Image (tube, rainbow, N blue to C red; front, side):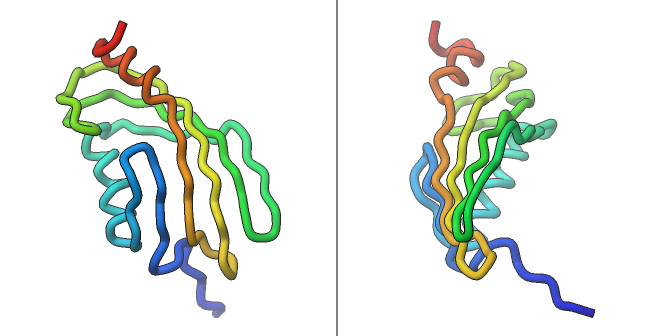
Length: 114
């Protein structure tokens, strides 16, 4: 039986709208924090492409804002968030990620901005 590879390097860095997190544990805590705030969160990959040591994915997140998210108290609002990530790969593992998201659209959906 062949041993499977880990998805991320141990020192994976994610550069996102809330700053940078480095290391598998911090990265996982960040992602699981999203699921805490949005228990019904779903991701839909709209498009993806890449090369030997990089990949890009454009995706849409859907869910209901049930707990504090990005410092915003729960609104109970359903939302749709467009986002895009660029992945740098090392030996087939994700080593670095850069993510951009439509945070302005998210704030409008939460009723914080008109």
